Image (cartoon, rainbow, N blue to C red):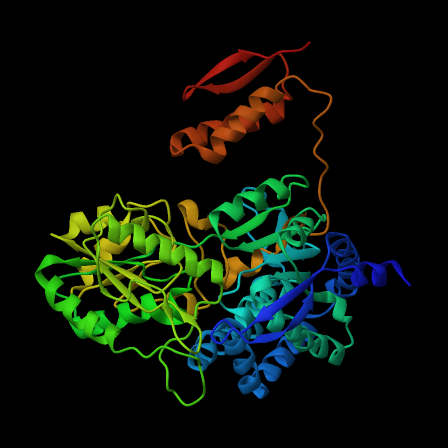
Amino acid sequence: MTAEAQIRSEAKMISCFNPATEAHLGDVAATSPEAVTVCVQRARAAQKQWAQSSFAQRRAVLQHIMDYVLEHADELCEQIAMDSGKTYENAMLGEILPICNKIKWTIKNGEKYLKPEKVGSGILMHKQGRIEYQPLGVVACIIPWNYPLQNILSSLVAPLMAGNAVILKASEMVAWSSAQFQRITDQALRKEGFSPDLVQIINGYGDTGAALVRAGVQKILFIGSVSNGRRIIEGSAEHLTPVVMELGGKDPFIVCGDADLERAVHSALGGSFINLGQNCIASERVIVYESVFDRFVESVTRHTAAMRQGVPDLTGSVDVGAITSPLQIELIDRLVKSALHAGARALTGGAIKVTEQGQFYPPTILIDVTPEMEIATHEVFGPVMLVFKVKGEAEAIALANGTEFGLHSTVMSADSGKAERIASQLEVGATCINDFGLCYLNQNLPFGGVKYSGYGRMNGRDGLRAYTNPKAVMKDRFGWGVPPKLFPVRPGDYDKGRETVRLLFSKSWRQKAISLLCLIKLAVLGGGKRSMVANNGAVKEYEGRGN
């Protein structure tokens, strides 16, 4: 038995269940910390060939991945729904669509942003400069359970296009489906003659993730909680590994008094209850001007109360499914109960619902929430909409900025100028005006947050280049040059340096002329005993240093 086989035979098993029905889906082997080292070694070997691949070959691999996703979309949605508890509709629009959108954009734009870029040479007119975006090596992605397929495929697209190998540590909560997704990249890579070791999806618990962080990879993408993000940073410090972090949020959704109320209500419903709120950019805090508060609350409550919840299927019989993680249900329930005990009121939901089908947390609307309550500042990551009443713009902005998070935001207003003014004052990574969440779908825009929502960016040009080493290169413009003779230092060298600086950077044309005259004199006299130099804009004779 090989060392790798021995490691795998001793692996712990992950028991996987359908969160909506609690049916047992199967068992998946957890990758041990020892096996992680082997995975990284194999990825590093495969990356050497991939780093030399052409952009055309990389596009071809990505196209194969998208072709597979499109051809097997129904099968993939079924696996996603069974493993995560989400509806088939959300699996299609929340996972398949964003994956295809990201791959399409990367195929079209990847080479443009990753090929060597010529840049100006500034004052060095005899030189040419360029930036080469070179692959880093092995990239580790540690991703959560809320979007099982999208988190995997969307996370690997940019580093793969940039020439890297990728190891993705999926959450143990969705190990059953993620273990099956490996075949997507395996087939795509083999079709173009590359090793499947280039992309490896591993499953495991916290010790697996910790081992991957410390395995000497060249970059880490982490999507998850703040507490786990801190652990990632501690582990990454061992090798000074750079990290891109997306740590969730407490996103504000501001409804101004002049907003289109129907549009605001349905945007808020989507922002709060898509994927049962298990969404990094969920609109957890809906901030409504008092002039429209009652009408907004009446409408959003009526629509929420009518939502059908149950086991997802293809008949469209349910609007929302189940929470993926049992631990998350407990957290949601604790936060809501604490808020209710402190004086908040639940207009819908507010407690775990147990049915013959399984355990669910219903879409919940809370009002009379105060900023001091834990639920007002802690990420719920569940189907809970907090609705706050404010007098106007200043109060709305202060409340929106009043948490440690800053990922996404929404502003609803019929007045474009007002919406832009409010948006410019929000301490977030993105603002969507009169819609929810569309910034993420626009692949030309960077995605990421500020404050405790993390740092670094995904998507777009910046997201691609995040997985490269931007290497600066300078060469002769004309194929020849005069070597700079800096040593030994000669009489007049200081004066030549000073007048050169003044000639290049002074705002005064008179000073430039004086400095040019002085440089000519210094060149003619060679920095001897008597040189003409400029001092504070005046020309005077100067006894040169030297013999």
